[in-house]
Length: 297
Image (cartoon, rainbow, N blue to C red):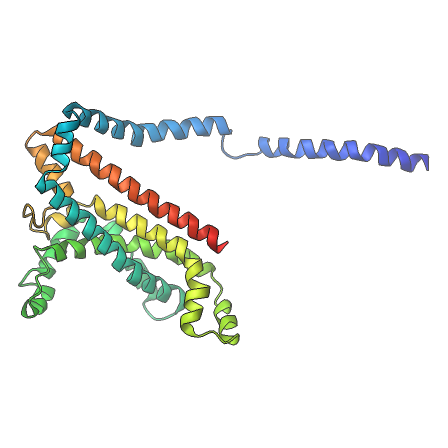
């Protein structure tokens, strides 16, 4: 009995020692350096790549003064470029939200000849230089091109119009939506659809109440990435848009024009305005994503 009681009395201490030693061993066996060193490297890297260039943009724009800054960012030519850039980016992201979801669904849920080739083609906008994409889309959508020739009798002008800008921004934004949704679909068990059907749910009810809540956060993320990519796109749009001021001139082209005119302060002012508006829109989308994820949980 004495031996048993002594064993029991020393067991809590031994267990505590093991609990203390286990985190110590885990800390010693971490592959990367400690938290302090990795955090310092992260902050230094982000400062060099992101924070310092953005700070320089704000500093250069501040040389105008508030009145002149507001005049530059609200002049009619700037407002027309904002409407086209943000409007076309939103439309492109909305189109990709629908068709990107369909593409991801087909690639994940079905097996057919050429599926791997189709899956690789989704990444083509990533690998293709944007200037090459712009020239290709312009050739196809011009009045004499394969697509433009079919649209001309219908009175639809694809190239050198706002529609051409939407086409280009849809092209470059598709991979963001597909690649964001694909992993979620792969982890989504198809048996939950069968369970919903066995309980009497229709296809629409299964989609709206079972599948969409699981995909919604990823879908919002893909839309946000596609929108952010489209807002700053230049190479694939500059050819197909026609670059007509007040009509088909995007904001990045307006910034390049001001730089060519050595109006560096005006260019940075428009850049700062675009940066602030884009940040606010992305913040709203991320808040919606957080809210939808918490609601689903």
